[in-house]
Image (cartoon, rainbow, N blue to C red; front, side):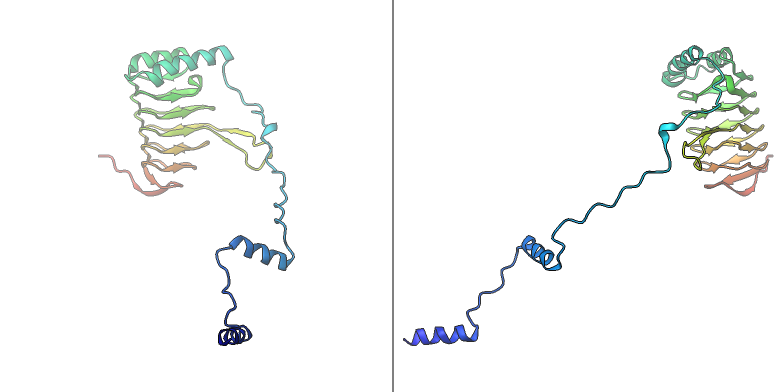
Length: 231
C-alpha cells in the first residue's frame, strides 16, 4: 500500500517521466522539417546555358602552311627522330628540318624531345641551342636569331583564342627572338612577343609583351629586374 501511494505521488510530481531519447538525428530532422512546412528536398538551381559554344568553333582563315600528306609525314618523322630518339643527332635533325622547309643556320644544337609543330614556319640563325623538351608551337612564323639559347621545357606559343567570342576563335601571331636571347627553363612566351637582342627571361617566367634589348626579366608577367652586362 505504501509503495502504491509513493508511485502515485511520483507520477503526479513528474518524477517518473522518461528521459528524452537521443541518437535519432533523422527523426529530429524530419520533425523540424514537418514543423517548418518544408518537408521536401529543395529544388536544384535552374541551369543556364553557357555563352561559349565550342561546338561552332572553326579555325577560320588559319593557314597550316602545308598539305595533309606533308604534315602527316612530318608527324611521323618528328615522333621518331625528335621525340623518341635519346640522342641529339643535331646534324641529321638540321637536315630533316631543312627538307621540310625550315631555314636553319650553322651549328644549331637540337637536344632530345624537342617538339616543333610546323618546320616550314621556322627560321633559326647560327649557333642556336634548343634544350630538352622545349616546345616551339609555331602555328605562325617563329624567327630565332643567332646565338640564342632556349632552355629545357620552354614553351614558345604563337597561338591563342579570342575569349570575347562565343566561338572561341583561333588567334595566331608571330614570335621573334633577336640575337643573343636566353629563354630560361620552363618559360612561356606568348603570341606577338618580340625579345630584343640579348634579353634574358629567367626560369619559369611568362612573357606576354615585348622585352627590351639587354634586359633581364622575371616573373608572371615578366618585369624588368636589371640590365644585362656582357663582358
